[in-house]
Length: 429
Image 1 (cartoon, rainbow, N blue to C red):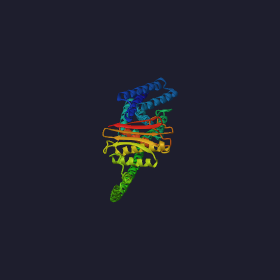
Image 2 (cartoon, one colour):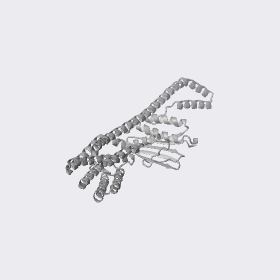
Image 3 (cartoon, helix red, strand yellow):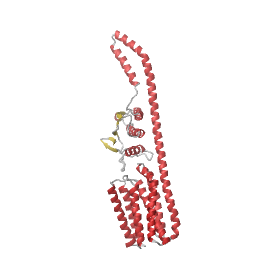
Image 4 (cartoon, helix red, strand yellow):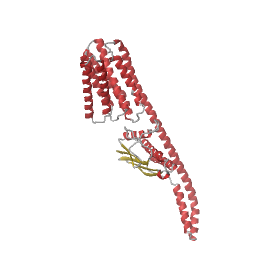
């Protein structure tokens, strides 16, 4: 019986490490990651020998060793993960639940057939089939959610695998096993199906909610884009009307200048010419770059800056066609621009200055934003970006910027220096 338990646990630990390896994006190379997983597998196997072979009758040993094994398992997932957050913890806890199913099937078959080796073989097959089904059905959904930076609320989802694991353990293994209470087997089987369905439904629900949120944010961006186009259309229309009037009045100005020349009133001529220049400048439609979407967003932001009397030092060089999603790129510009304007709008007029540099070509992308700050800026320990102090509904702009950077394999650097906040986004294509 002890031999059966040892082999059953060994199989479970093997698939547990496979699950973590396949469902988590790696921080280290494949070789290093595999060695970490193998080391954890060996630690789990050795501790199994302690609780199953050396102290088989000690409930205290079983309990504390199991807790230690849980810590090792979850630490392994967090250690090899590229992103270390509550999503990784959720996946690690879920992996522990799934491998319990194979162990439970092995125990059930052994109870009903009394055949140890067939039960272990079927357990191995069940583990393999379960891993294959999960990989085919939820792997892509999970990776999409894992890659997204938004992590608020995931700690609550971690309670689902925690309670499933505790329920499995107390019903099937501790303090009394299925061998002692075989009447619990039907309940365990239905409990297993409930867990499988629950995970699929929860992940699909999270995916749907995330998609709806993305659609909402895109709609907000499109609305901003449309309003920007309307503003530009109005400006062009107004400029055309003013220039028509100007052209109509030019013959009067020409006649006036001729008379002034005859009278040698050169100062008045200069005033007239200055007036014509001023009217021409007032009706000039500003073009910041060749990209229509980016130009529209910048125009809107510059108009907003003017409403706050903020001086913007702007350096823009964006090609008409760029190798990134134009809408997402424009959203990043809008978020950075807006954050900088909000930060300085209440300062004294002489301090209301923002510096924005935006360059994007077929080879690389570079965005830099600089602005003064007075309140303390708290940086997120995981992302390195400023985190909002205004509650959960704020800070989405920075998360959007980070998601865009991850998507294009870019790098973000944020720092404060001499009272100036700097944020730089760079990517090479």
